[in-house]
Amino acid sequence: MKFYVISFLLAFTQASVITGLFVSNLYVPDLVLLYLFLHTSKQEKVDVKKPLISGLYLDLMYDTFGWNISGKMLVSLFLEIFKSRWEFATRLSLIIFYGFVALLEHLFRYILFRLKYYYPFDLRTFFLGFSIELFLLYLLTLFIIKKHAQT
Image 1 (tube, rainbow, N blue to C red):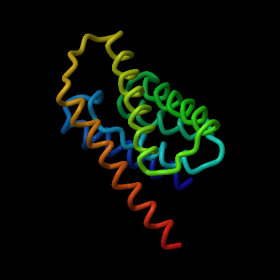
Image 2: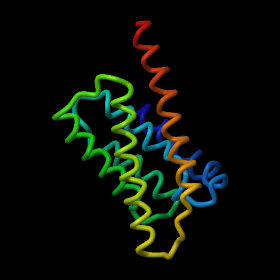
Image 3: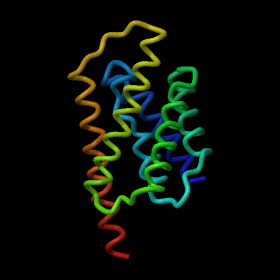
């Protein structure tokens, strides 16, 4: 239940506050994806219900007809495939894999949006949002690793 409450609060913050700063929901740092990735990377098996519900929160707030659900399901599919073959032993490997998967999810969402509407691609805003997302992942992994080292 804690996951769903935090996911809802992150989706609400992302949809109401951060989207206003980045002008479009295509360039916003995806806090829900970041939380979903960190939460599911610690678990043994990736659950389908968590990406579905967290994507549904964003779809309801953005009114995007399932585009966020499909992106979150794509990320969980990639995470399950990669976790079955490799282990994320270091922080750097986790950040590199997240960068790859998040870039795929952002571009997938942009392509789906562009099929319906014509929207210009602003590389500077996209890079700014993506680098903020990676920086937040770096800070959160520092906090998580220090927390596990103390216990």
